Amino acid sequence: SYHLAVDGVSVLFLPLTALLVVVVMLTSWSSVRHQPKAYLMTVLGFETVAMGVFAAVDLVLFFVFWELLLVPTFIMLRVWGTGADRARAALKYVLYMLVGSAGLLLGFILLGVNHRDAPGSGGELSFDLLALMDVAVPSGTQTTVFFLLAFAFALKAPMFPFHSWMPSALLDGPIGMAVFLAGLKMGVYGFLRFVMPLVPEAFAAWSWLIAVLGVVAILFGALVALVEPNLRRLLAFSSVSHVGMAMLGLASLNTQGVQGALFLIISLGLTSSAMLLVAGFIHHRVGSTDVAALGGLAQRAPALATFALIACLSAIALPGTTGFPGEFLVLLGAFRTYGWLAAIAVLTVILTASYVLVFYQRAFNGPVTSPVVDAVADLGPREAVAAVVTGLAIIVFGFFPGPVLETSRESVDMLIQRLDPPAGELAGD
Image (tube, rainbow, N blue to C red; front, side, top):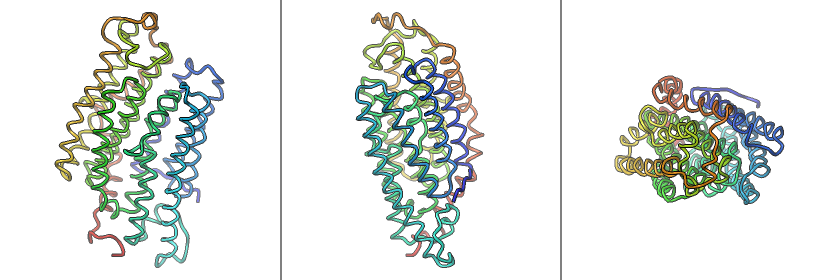
């Protein structure tokens, strides 16, 4: 059925999506020269479908929107990509997503069939989220559905070790598409919206695996980003690392960890987008995002350097930026459930600070060594508006995280209650 609704979780993603679309349209005004009207239509098409993904509470409707996302994303990557391998990157992205979609569809079908066969359902085949939540799912079915859905959403997130499509997509795609892929964590949202409420006991039983993979992703992404010479690929692996942090929060199975994970992925929508906008501004001016080709940008583009500094400080979760509250809550919740895993995750704060600050030092500080950099112009009016809006959001939600946390608190508490049933066993055991 065509059933749309929002709660304290999904309502946060709708304004974030709208904000990112406005920012992308502002910054693409001068950077997209090839068929700009078609590009903006594609961006608006993406927004429409993304809103459907976040508002759908019928599983079939969600799946339709989920699949439709492939169309504008593929078109943006294939037609307006900036890399020589954009065709290969577009095909790789679509193939990965289709493989995940097969698991997603099968998992949804199993849930619908279980509802049909459940006592009191009257033999009705329903895919409504609220109806499915009222039906007990046997342990074997829960485990099967958990792995099917987790595989699909892990591919989309992307979560280690299903991340290999991300670096090529961010390197070869247009910045606008990269902002959507890195800023809207639909894979993590899928865990919150479907996996945790529909198969809660299986999620709780396998949360240790999610936590381990999350910590591995945190370390892997940070270590690769530390030696990555290209800013776009650096941001791709940084995104993998931050997704690992969010998954560690979900796996903590407590309010602090889950709320922290939710705040973190909303924060990443701003922080990752800001960093990618910086990459786009640099590429538009210099023609490259290789850090070795930069240096001294702050002397020629002080406004760009200031915006980049705000984005970098949020990326390292400095207090006073939007990156801090979510990461702090995730680690707090993780320490309560996985002491030693959380301790390992804390070490990545140093690694993240290392690769982010090293990039800023090499790109913006020091002497101007390239004639291309020497001729760089500062941010234009539309670029400046996008930078100011994004930068202010990073600072405001860093100092005032309360509205986001209060909005999601009741929905998160309901999720936690489903993850901790009184019997403590899988349904049907």
